Amino acid sequence: MVEEERKYAVPDDFVLPDLSGVAPAGGTVVAAAPVTLVAGYLDTADLRLARSGASLRHRAGDEPPWTVKLPTDSPGLRHEISRPGPAGDPPAELAGLVTVFARGAPLAPAVTVRTERHAYEVRDADGRVLAELVDDRVTVLDPAGRSTDAFRELEVERKGGDRALLDRIGAVLTGAGARGGEFVPKHVRALGEAARGEPDLVPPAELPAKPTAGAVVTEAIRDDVARLLAHDPLVRLRAPVGDDDTAVHQMRVGCRRLRSDLRTFRPLLRPGWARPLRAELKWLAEVLGPARDVEVLRDRLRRTAAADPTCPVDPAAVDRLDAALAGRQETALAAVDEALRSPRYLALVDALVLAARAPRLTRRADRPARRVLPRLVARPWRKLAGGAADGGAAALDPLGPDERWHAVRKRAKQARYAAGAATPVVGRDARRLAKALARIQDLLGEHQDAAVAARTWAELAGQHPDDHRLAVEAGRLLERERQTVRRARAEFPTAWRRASRRRRTRWLP
Image 1 (cartoon, rainbow, N blue to C red):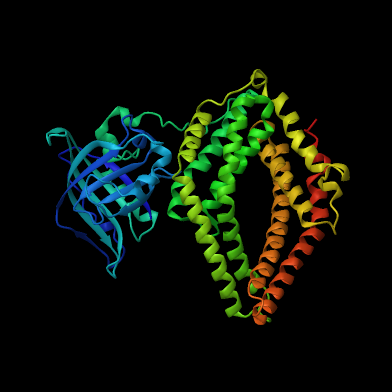
Image 2 (cartoon, helix red, strand yellow):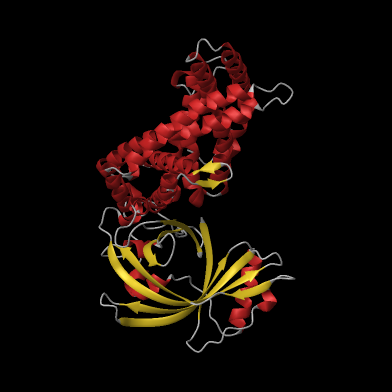
């Protein structure tokens, strides 16, 4: 689940204001009985979790008592996952969720906090809890149980209500003298300045007005690494990241973008540094690939079967095909889980953190980005736009094999990523090219997905040669997919003409 909170600092003598006015018509504010909570937080010796915005705690009295909180892109929003388990022995699943933060360093008790909590629930007329305000008096304890610090804070958590309700509660609190601002978790405040240090994973930052080529490639690498590692815990949880997206997909995209950037900017990077990193990213992408592919197939199966409501595909046949895909998916996800628990992956995470901190650059990277980047982007563009001799987009045969079209799709993807990386320096021209190439990539991606799906439906039906009904329905699905392939091929020339117009590529030498 995603937890949304806002914190407010208050002095010890702060008087909580009347909150009844924030409840909707017919609603109430209900006070809960006071409770005492004792939470022990685990971290590495150098507080890697705390500095990254993550936490792993055991809180007596909670059920379940173990909780991991993971950062998101938005302050005050965190993923919260709780599991049962005895004190002193965190569940392996939760310990795995902080792998990209701890990176193999041992987890040990870091701080214990005792909280005297008074909670107030804002409810609507039907009794549904919309938000919860807690008034916490926090005491920091040393290993012997002695108090070393104390503070008071208010915390408002969104439940069934909207953010406007949180705004109204916040206005009442600040009007009474509470101070909002930076979101600082209790254990971070208790641990002091060391817990507020910079995270080991350097985040992307703004480029200077006239960046070097090295500065641009560094920020591209940081962006790619951040995307990849941010989705590691969500892949382990098998959690969605949106209505039509998955963590496996986004982690795989992170791998591909980083591999592409390492290839495009190869002249700016030390070969002995970049080559092994690309090889390990290829291994990870190949592990994630089957899991992502079967996600796409299962989604396509239902959509293709329902594509013509006037002539639906037999639901029983669809269910049989989906069951076979579900088995493949479990196998693929088990392979992903195994890889993410491996020493090889742990070494890759360390390498990625170091890559984001300080990629190994060549002397050429010291040159102005505006002079260097267009030539580097031109290479994948020329490879994409080549003729028949080198298998480029300009010579795609409408009747050619699926594999040739897929090869052009991969070239389009690299050219798009390259143009996107140059956009902060080149500006509108690079952005236009990247947008046009995104259309090419999407079109050829639909082509590839349909081609793979068609082969898969035939393969699955072939595993049951005596089931003639399944063969017929699989054949109908196959023909619908091939129709999609033909449509994509018909649309491609127009999309390619738009992408290759001179006004989009004139900045390329």
